[in-house]
Length: 236
Image 1: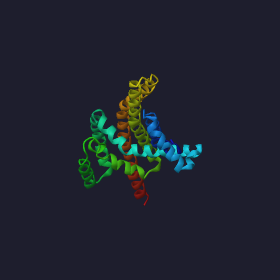
Image 2 (image 1 turned 180 degrees about the horizontal axis):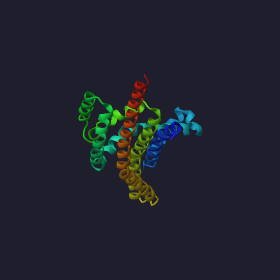
Image 3 (image 1 turned 120 degrees about the horizontal axis):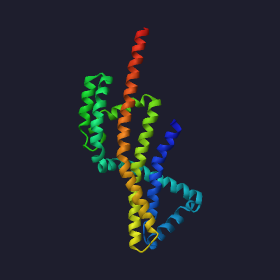
Image 4 (image 1 turned 90 degrees about the horizontal axis):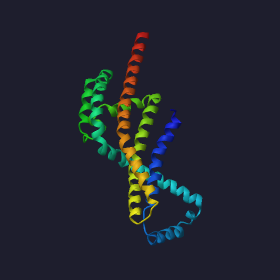
């Protein structure tokens, strides 16, 4: 995947969850007499919103801002909710990669410091079970051709995590509307439940893949760097 495609995926990781959340908030069963004064106030004070193009632009901007706010909390929320499904597996598999990374790093003091820092996490994040994960990401950043792959995986994980809360909002909308006798609300309920269930069950596998793959890429980068130095010394 090239850089442009990764940028698009990363942008959608902001926008799509924001659009779904804004859609869910719009469908919330709020009495019309609450919204009418607010709508009239906006129309009177911001005439530009009467233009459909301007209103559409503001809607997209609002969705993007909501997506950004979701990004601040969604990943940590999914880590907490699904940690029992992936932390043990990542810890076991990452321990094997850690041995290879330590040989590639070839710096005992740095390896000790990274392990010490990883123990400061809360036990539900990645650092606790994969102490070299964040270091691996920094190593990959120095290699653009490898960082593209890592960034794609990160964008996919954040997109999946960001959709969980919006789907839950759709579920709440569906439940409330059904309780008010709105039969069409069953569609919202089913879509929200299906989306939240899919995100919840697929997130652990995506998280595991991201953590392990990033460390594999870091090993490639470190070994190629060592090989390059040895070739340079040999040529000298």
